[in-house]
Length: 269
Image (cartoon, rainbow, N blue to C red; front, side):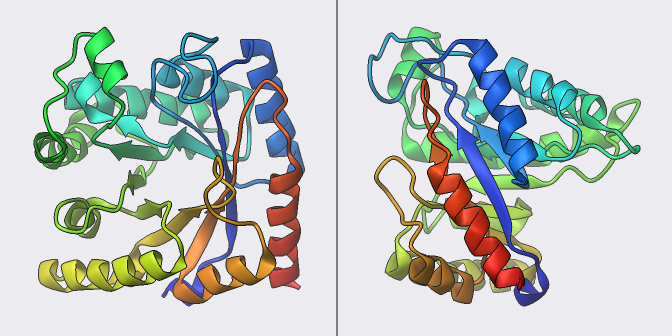
């Protein structure tokens, strides 16, 4: 049940406007601080500030995170399925899973979505399509990814968790009900409550217990969300167990991370 899950803290490290050496260092700082999950994002250009500023690619960075860390889970928030063949995505994820294994078990989370930033598509030669067509493609890709994991030699070290990010009520939340181990939302409290009700309906329709899905939400994400304890507690009451502040370079202010970690400790106490 959701109430049995521990509170976890994840941090999205935006791979923009920062030399790689600093990105590597901040990932290590976060592991040392005690966060549970580190995410990056799957874009090709900065989302804020100078649109042509420094930027690094997601999956190669994730492989480096796998090698440099020993405890944290990690993944993209989120991978864009349109950029890569689904079987290739599965193979990349399996390989990173093995790179990250220390005591025989990998730590990779397959965070995925349909993509939304048009420049990523057009400048790299991918068809942008429509929201609907991108979600339909994601629906086709997810079973292929799971199937490929079963065919690979060696197989992944564990059942790689699938995180789906997004809040579309007809298609995205249906995909969450069908495929996700984690659902990530950036919703405010009233919206989150409504969408959780819709997710329960989709889970009932596909014969799945909604409590099998870990609920994740962004806090203090580029002006969205809040790290106020009363807001975090209300999100907790709704079933959120993975709380994710985001930090941007080049400064990577960790104050929001420390605040959420302190709140987590107060919940444990």
